[in-house]
Amino acid sequence: MRSFVKLPLVAVVSLAVLLAVGVATASAHGRPGQGPGVRGVSIGSLVTRSATELGITRAELKAAIVDSANTSIDEAVADEELDADEADELKAEAADNLRVAYSLSRTKTVASNLEITTAKLNSAFRASRKAVLLAKIDRAVANGDLTEEEAAERKERLANAKLPGYKPAGQAFSFDGGSRGECESRR
Image (cartoon, rainbow, N blue to C red; front, side):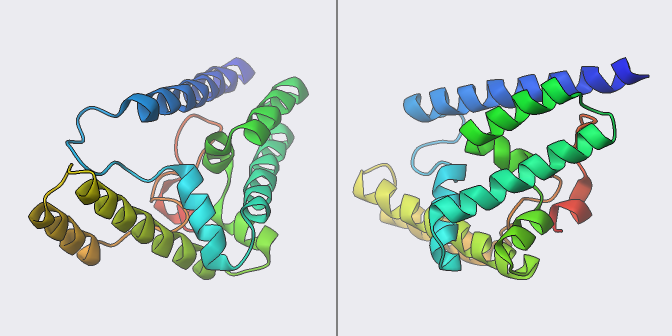
């Protein structure tokens, strides 16, 4: 039975590492399929802006995220989903890679680590997503990648959008290879 748990875990960890490398490569070369102008919000930009929204340093927010990831890893060890060596490797990866730490973290634990409510954490991340996207739209206009009309349309869509908080629904990481669903991502 234990090998059935390890296989999805190894696949998910491998995917997370490949995704992190792929995202770094894609951001260096641009991402196809998203059209000219504005790309998505990077985790680094989101964390930096959210720290400002929360009135804390980026290092404090990153530490809360990494601590939350480590808590998730420790829970997986306690549930015998990971062994100690796997946990150590995953903790090292989370410490070195904010994208991995973010994917392993939980909204509720990050908020608790910061001694704030999940509502405050979600609100800060929601406002940060909007601010980062607005800045990207403005840069795209300045760079000639978007027209003023295209920018106005995107800004209107953004104004009417219901943006996610700390994590988009369904984005909480699970050691069984699945997601924890919408309810868990809001905790």
